[in-house]
Amino acid sequence: MRDQRRGPLASVGLHTTLVIASAVAVFPPLWLVVTSFKPKSEAFSTDVVKDPTLRNYQHVLGDTEFLTWFGNSLFIVVITTLLGVFVAATTGYAVSRFRFPGMRPLMWLLLITQMFPVAILIVPLYNIMSTLGWLNQPISLIVTYLTVAVPFCAWMMKGFFDTIPVEIDESGRVDGLNPFGTFWRLVVPLAKPGLAVTAFYTFITAWAEVAYASAFMTGEENLTLAAGLQTFVNQYTSDWGSMTAAAVMIAIPAALVFSWAQRHLVAGLTAGATKS
Amino acid sequence: MAVDTSPAMDPAAGAKGARGRGGRVHKPGTPPPRRIRNALARHWYAWAMVAPVVLVIGLIIGYPLVRGVYLSLTDANEANVERTIGINHIPATYKTVGLDNFRAILKDQVFWDRLSWTVTWTVSCVALTFAIGLGLAVLLNRRFAGRTLYRSLLILPWAVPAFVSVFAWRLLYNEKNGILNKVLHGGGIDAVPWLNDPTMAKVSVIAVNIWLGVPFMLVALLGGLQSIPGELYEAAEMDGASPWQRFRHITLPGLRSVSSTVILLSTIWTFNMFPVIFLLTRGGPGDSTEILVTYAYRLSFVNSPRDFAGASAWGVLILLILMLFAVIYRRSLRKQGEVW
Image 1 (cartoon, chains in turn orange, red):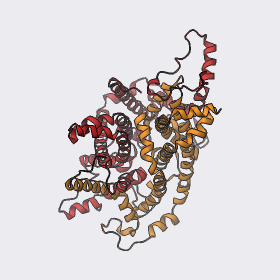
Image 2 (tube, chains in turn red, cyan):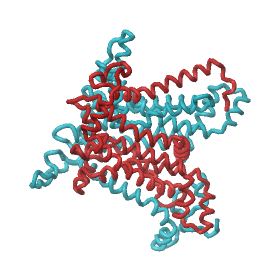
Image 3 (cartoon, chains in turn red, blue):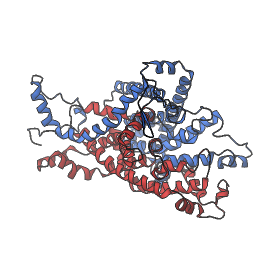
Image 4 (cartoon, one colour):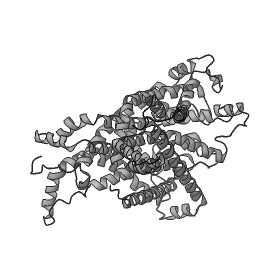
């Protein structure tokens, strides 16, 4: 690396910039955490907690449907992530390794689905879901989220598979594995970083989706977290205490998945971005 | 690898040079039925692997799209679509009106106002996010104490679900009691109506979107930087190139393929960014922060009576704009020699 001759001034500049940037990055969520421990009446005081309280957490967990929403979200997201990673991986692999008729249109399709505004799909989708009797059912959101997350993930996985030498596949074939066997036994284990990023991306997409969740799910007990959180702070009420406590608890699973995937993020995304 | 090419595997598939169009391997003279059988034998592995995606996309995006386009040509609204009230089933009574919806929208100043703000929003968000992400990535690409810590802190916003972050920002932006104004007050500055003044609200939503977008840019660009061989920099330094020259002639070209992808994707994402605006300002004050997507959503889910036809027509226009953009963008990349 080329930094041996950095002067003290450059060093100070480097660290100052990074400290400021990190502070900006960390402050809003941190403030949320701080606020969640304040008594309701002081939600907006600028002091760092004077007398910390768990009242907000108790209230959210005990007196609201929060746990139900949490369960709903968790169920939807776990299924979406499992299916999404699997489908994105097979697609990415096929596009990376095989030249087949329909491949270029497929690549275009994957890109174009990124462009679909919620606005054009949501009304017809709502109608379909209602015809199928899927409104208020987790499956409606699972299927919808798959279409949101899988195209990008497949693109990313393609780039990732491109970086795995073809010789590995060839050796598998020589040993008598068919393409599915090669994929499953040899390539998937090597692609763990890519899979981790895909899982993380699918998870966060589904965990944080707002528009479809608000439109498809009604009735307190069917809401997901994204829709449920809005009930704390809307036009009529603003219960910032409950909101912040709930927000912190919503962020925890995401943070856990994130810290698990984090060391793979750079490697995974690089491969996806540089090669696609 | 054996010489008789096994059904689906192209030995040169991984090599860059082999990215030709698929399906050109068959001899042109082969009669069609046999060609289909051959293609099946050769490609069924690949087709089996992509089938789930094609199915899901076809059913859940293809059909709604067709239906959305169809609705945009009708006068469907809440009052005349098919619906069931109690035990009564009321059939649809809307009719097709051709391109009337589009004509009406394009004649309306509202569309052009929303379009110009959406473009401003997209360009400023993407440009600033990219610039900040690149700057931080370059800083983090050196070796120094605390690098890993900085990196974790800087990508933290990504770990927080976007709607949670948006609520956190609403807490900060609160006009009477938010911490931003409290801090400004401490410095003797009057409260800033972050979300209640049309101009400030625009600045505020852009700031939040940048805050949300930087981690993705940072990680992608950092990865790109790490794939540039260090020898290039050493050679350039030997030749006496200044830091700026090295940045211009090594870093930027080295990042070309990463940046072209992330810029394309984040442009599309930002153009369609629903939650930030919807949750932060609901498009307000007035409709000053309403982008095309949130406006279309408002037509079909917030306004009364719900205007399904109008919302679909807006959706079709949004899609057309984005596709036009993607085609032009891809074409300009291809002209620079980037093949995809």
